[in-house]
Amino acid sequence: MGPRGPEGTSLRPMSARPPNILWIVTTQWRASATGYAGDPNARTPCLDALAAQSVDYTQAVTPHPFGPFARAALLTGVPSPENGVRDYFDPLPDTARTLAHDLNDRGYATAYFGKWHLGRRDPAAPLVGAAHATTVVPPAGRGGFGLWEGFESGFLLNDPWLHGTRLPAPVQLPGYQSDVLCDRAAAWVAAAAQRPPSSWFGVVSLEAPHPPYDAPAAGVPRREPRALVLAANVPRGGAAEARARQELAGYYAHLEATDRAIGRLLAAVASPEGAAPDTIVVFTSVHGDMHGAHGLFRKGWPHEDSVRVPLLVRRPGVAARRDAAAVSLAGLAGMTRAWAGGEGTDRAETARPAEARISMPSVVALPHQCDRVWRGLRTPTRKLVLNADGSPWLFFDLERDPLERENLAGDPARARERAELSSRIGS
Image 1 (tube, rainbow, N blue to C red):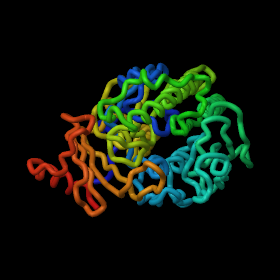
Image 2: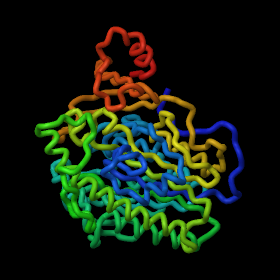
Image 3: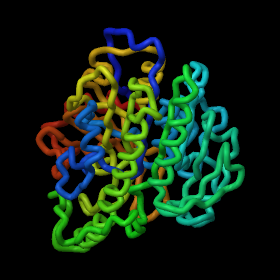
Image 4: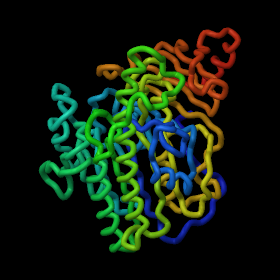
């Protein structure tokens, strides 16, 4: 069984005009780090307001907790490496069919703004800085979007470089990256609204709150490290706690600044000059960050801090609620195709309690990242993770132990349960 995303069964008609669809995709924003999720450190009033109007998938996971692998799966609906991305520097093949291709065929106007991280880049060039930020992604490598305006990577949270359909050569634009991208996307939405009857699909891909965490955050001050409330799975009294506090001081500033930028984009979408009232809005992140949980940092790890991501879907006619189904972002492309095709249900964003595959198809040789290839299965209450040779590495009872402090991979009493889950993971 492949990754499953939200899907419905009993159909009801949508409006005659296909809905506009907006994806807002962030980087390294873990599921717990919002006000609506109960994080006492997070100041996210705009997303809190969106959550109050949305289906909140409290157990959503990324299929791969690392940027290129996750983005490739998100855009194609096909997991890595089957989509062509096995290693960190692998580009998405020009021949890969993405959601943009499908929606173009349905008559949608399609646009992409921001971080791509799926093009060809020089492995020897510095990851942070202008080298990757100014790497030109050729038109054939832009996933089929009618308008593409972004950057390969570079992790420049301020004064980003953009190139694309309207910018043949990279141009550096002043301002906080989230502000620049959301404002340009809002302008495109306003222009698209003047060109009915075509519907539109837009993706806004934000690098924040990815490190460097000490980068300026549009005037939002860093938090006081000692005042931050840490999760109980961060070891206390040592280097892990000290580092977590220092990093999180900047992380929460970038969350707040990016929440504000997203709020302006959502306001523009809802304005008379913006989208039609049937616009569907999705907010998510390609992966999280360990931030000291279990003494670990960054991503690639199969723990909840790295794998579980926010997923909000605001869809007209669907009541706001919290949904604890096990869903994967790999299912979001199929879900979006269904919306564009006029399919929907009273529980259109709800999956039957299912299971989501998670994996890392290769080791990314960067500091602090996960040290092994692994594959696993996550249900609403369990998580089993296997090593590359199929042996159990991690097994958690998430219902009883949501912070994953007791690894049951070697518990003889759980052998039958592990074997049953392992049989469903596949090779």
